[in-house]
Length: 538
Ligand SMILES: *Cc1c(COP(=O)(O)O)cnc(C)c1O
Image (tube, rainbow, N blue to C red):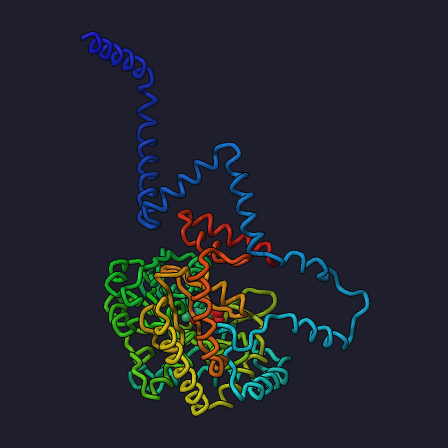
């Protein structure tokens, strides 16, 4: 009873206290409730976007860093990791030049550069992807494209009245790649068009930008969103950040392919674009392009197919009789495609092509300026001035190889891919991730730490790609590997055995960092680490 009366008393005095503020409450209450509602709404949408777990972790990390000393401790630990990732690089930079030489070195620079070139790691036959030209005719092909580049290194297609030559080459590279991807098919609509760019990333950036602006015109979308499978290239993240587009990343299915049903659930009135890869970079697996095309058509959204890796392999693999599912403009609903000439097209680095279903979409890629005192200006891609030499190099690569050349190359790399897949399957500790469709083979282990295996391979001069979710490695097979497949498999087998016999990290390896970064729940921290690493690298 005593407690009860105490409570009543308390309530009464609280009421008297509060009543003093009543007029104020009338004004403040609605504002406050609006603020709270706004806060709750943004909280709910943040949780919806990033998941409850990562939101809780981010808030926890934010709070804990407010404790005196914790932030500086965390920063110091972060620096240690960055230093480890940088191991040895710092001292190397000590005698790097920081100023222009007072007197030029003249032609002696060539000797200096030859010496510098020798310091690069031995890449021949040892890298995943990276250098795609290889085999017995590699030297001839390198000389040919280098000669083509140097003949046109002074040119710039921005000045199309002066350099008709490279304008002509760009148009032909675009037409030839388009024809490889179904432009001659009636079903394509006969309007396929495109441009050359500096690489896969620029092709993707442009396709995303054009889709965004096209959908703004077509549907009035002002808060654009796009949906990608988690296997799609990081260039889409770059595009989302650069062009202010909300990005939804959707898990793949059990076969490591885009999950069409899951993607469908994310489509709403603001969706501008969905994405499929043929194949995706991580596991080399082709997404269900036909189903994605149907989905895109039924919702009237754009659909980009990433053929950066597959564009110069799949059309030829199909001709050679490999069972390749549809992937190009013959699929209804595909609105744009990116295809790298500087990968399996065996062109010089810095060359890719972006293609569109029709001119209506592509027009949104261009920037035209009418009010500049520098005159009327129009440019098709991100760069203003563009390297005509590289366009000439790409044209030379495609024209010198021709269809027969690419068919022969494809036959060789598809053979080596089969051999590597079989070899990996015969190592009992490893398994191949999913079913690779062409020449990228990802593998993982339930027995050994795959990142330790990677360190072992690195210590023997191999450069593979480390992947996450699941932790795995991949090798992107090129002509460089045709003659070293057996060596690769032997080194891989030895590395697995070494790791199995000596579990625990080898000194100087990156496996602990990869392992820890994968397990770290605070992804914001991992992101900061990457930025700090980049910031200290260049
Ligand atoms: C390489 C690649 C890209 C990006 O290309 P860059 O030339 O590195 O900019 C995009 N998508 C896929 C599937 C790729 O393999």
